[in-house]
Image (cartoon, rainbow, N blue to C red):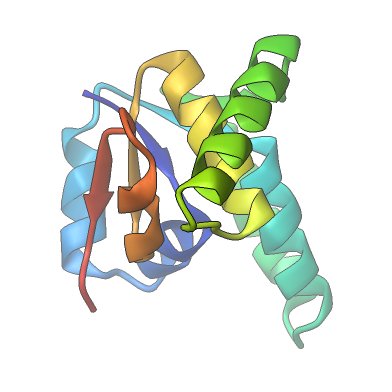
Length: 131
């Protein structure tokens, strides 16, 4: 199974959260969204361990089986359609999460997250975890 880690899943993995660690171990590959990188860097820059956290992220991204993905035109098209559908259904979710969902769908993966609002996205394989 190919998996995408949402920002909160990456943080949980780094903290050793067993359910996330197991899903990462069981994955055939991990696709990592540049949007998640941006969210993480925002958090790192606002924390007291910015350099250490950034270095750990860079080490993680350099591992075999971890594929850093940039948004593409297809990602943007999916984002636009998903955003429209969510708004029309009255279930908007945070913008960055729509980008993450769009990339997840583009690469045919499952998103791992603690955010239940991903379940509002029709056709998105989502593994919603509970703390």
